[in-house]
Length: 300
Image (tube, rainbow, N blue to C red; front, side, top):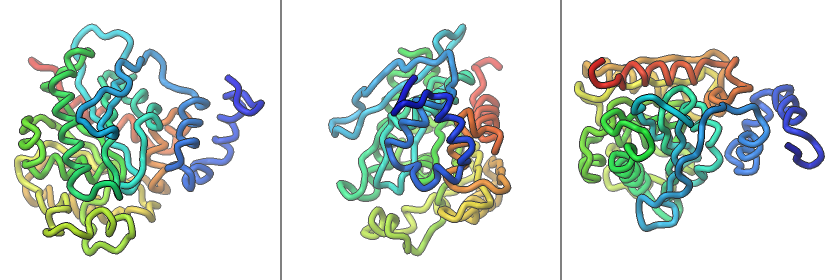
């Protein structure tokens, strides 16, 4: 594969030499994500089953579905919610993450959701719940088991994933209460009052009840099992968010697992899902092992 005169292997080597730091500044850039998808070694045996299915009437309410090319039985399902400060992101940029998870025995749904400034909280959480509703209704069409749905989110996507899962009203309003059986948060903001970052002010500053924007406000003993991953070098979403939510879940008696990766930053934890960067942290193995344990086949 060629791009600007360089083949994929050459560009892959350049990315590896540059290291994670060389991608951090531009990871939110769609061109960079597309290059990562196109030119780094990928996970084989996975196909995109759906390209742009509508789960609502807004142009942003579209999703893709990835699945192993063949499977002997119905597979657990993952809804993957990307980050981007609640104001950016496009599902096509995260094919590398979807393919990585799907290759380990999952049907993976990647929705877009409405973004700031076109909307404010809670519209993007409502969209995530609507995407879960679509998944419940359609996962079986693509080899998935709608009774075994987990959610994985990174950064703002982790905030959305944990809030939607812990605050019962989102999935209930979408008509699928209790549909999410397990949740994984990668470097998520879960306890970030008062709002001081511009992206948080733009997304949540008008919320009549600021506490209702915080996943930590909704911890409960019967919460679905959670895996919270962070890096101790994350200076974008401080690891204290993970520590605080984990402590609150444990205090409530909810099942939670935590892993902190030395030297891994905010984007590095996401890039660790991509084949060239998996040696940095076992994020993919930790995530998929947890989900297989928590989303067992019925009868297991």
